[in-house]
Length: 364
Image (tube, rainbow, N blue to C red; front, side, top):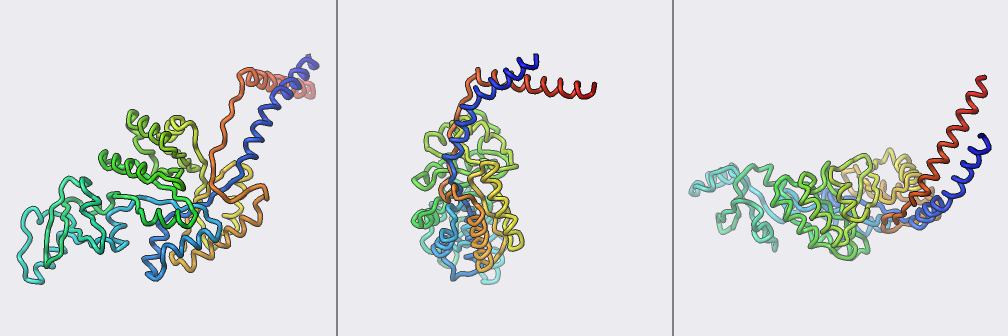
C-alpha cells in the first residue's frame, strides 16, 4: 500500500508540472509595476501655492518614477476651489442685497440653494445642463448667476465632469490617467457620469478605479450587466483595491473577461518611507500586485515631493532587476484541465494518507 501511495504521489507531481510551469511563465512575463498618485493632492497643493502649475507637478511626478494620476470627476465644490466658479448661498446673497440697498430676493430665489457665477471662460450653465431639477437665471450688478435650489452640501458634492485640461496635461507628459467613478445614488447622475467615463476613453486612459464600497450599478443587475459590457467594449481594464471588497466588482470582472489589475493602496508619510517601500516590494514579489496607489499625506508640495522621491528611490534599490516601471497589466488567464485537477486531488489524498500512516506508526 505504501508503494502504491508513493507512486500516486509521484505521478501527481509529474503530471501537474506543466500547469506549474505555465503559471510561472505567466508571472515572469508580467513584471511591470505602476505607481499612481491621486490628482486631489495636486489640486490641494496648487490652492496652497498659486505659483505651482499642474505641468510642473506632473513633470516632477514623472521624474520620480510615477506612471499615472488618478482623476475623480470635478464637483461643484472642486470647481469653486479651482476658481472656475463663485458660489454664493441664498443667505449670503440676501445679505449682499440688503447691504447694497438693492431689491430683496423674490420667489423662486428665496429658497435655500446656491447662486453660481461662472468665472473667466468657464460656462457652468452649459456644463451642467440637465444636471439639476431646477436652474434659474439671476442677474445682479451686471453679473449673471445660475440659481440652483436645494441643500447646499448636496449641490456642492454633485459630480459634474472630468477635467479635460488635467487629462491633456497628464497625457502630454507621457503619463497615464486613471479615472475614478462612484456608485452615485441619483440614477440620472450615475448615467451622466458613466457617459463621461466613456467619452474620455483614449490611449493612455486604459483602466478605471471605482470609489467607495460599491461599484456603479451594483444594486441594479440589469444596469450592472450593461455597464460591464460597455467597459469591455470600450477597452477599460478594472482595478481591484486590496482589503476593499467592492460590491458588484466580481460580476463586472467576469463581464470584462477578468481584465482585473490588483492594486495596493498605502499612506505614505515622511516617517514610514522605508516601511512603505518594503510593503511595495514585498507585495510585488510575493503577492503579484502590479499597481500601487500612493496617498501622500504632507499638505505642502515642498514636503510631499521629497517623500515621493525618497520612496521611489528605496523601491528601486530593493526591487529585483526583473521588474520594470511601466503600465500595470492583467495577468494572462490560464485553465487547468479537469484531469489534472483530479490527479492533483489524488496526489493530495495520497500524501495525507502517507502522513497519517507515519503519525500512527510513530505512536505505536
